[in-house]
Amino acid sequence: MKKHFYLIPLMALLSVITFSACDHGGGQNGKIIRNAVTDVDGNKYDAVKLGDQVWMQTNLRTKHYRDGSSIEQGTDNISAHDPLFYQPTTQVFAAYDEKTHGLYYNWKAVDNEKGLCPEGWHVPSDAEWTQMEEYVSSQSDYVYGDDARHIGKALASTVGWNEAPSYHEGHVGNNPDANNATGFSAVPAGKFQDHSWGSFGATAFFWTASANSFNSSWDRWVDYDSPLLLRLSANYNVAMSVRCVKD
Image (cartoon, rainbow, N blue to C red):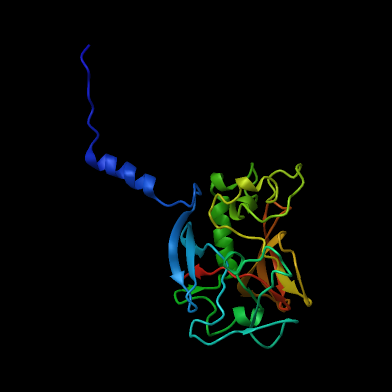
């Protein structure tokens, strides 16, 4: 029998190799950009591309503004007047890790003209969070089931979450191994409010840069017992996580 041999064009072969080598963060659909930005403290951050936006893949952990001036560390209470960062101890949260969970900032630090995020990046507005939410909701690979609002699992990290009831299918804490299709990697870092830490393992809280008419700011939550990216209003007397978005 006569054998037939087929030649693969070189450019086609190269395109296959190039596609296979793309870094998608261990099979995640979001394009991961390694060492995308370094803050003034020398901390390096990976980023993830979602639609037309590029987001930090981990929570901010700088102790200085982009001009190099320091942010004072708060301890017992949230100041309404001074910009502060907060950091729990491992005695408060045994699993706390600065690189994983970041630092926690009050509103005065977030809403500061010196710039909390590194040069070329900024604290996202409510509208920019909505833009990201709409993009993720438009991608069937990121939606759990048939409800386009169910994108919490696609944004949440695969580890660290409290366990949701087994009958709550599609909730972040139910089968977390299936989380993080986007690569956004939201971690349940909790928050500091009313002299105490809470919600570690349960909720990821993120500031937006958008104040509202209730003497508070819009924020976003990812919760272990919800399938949603929640949009709520946060009082200024709270310290939460920050994710920066590229200018």
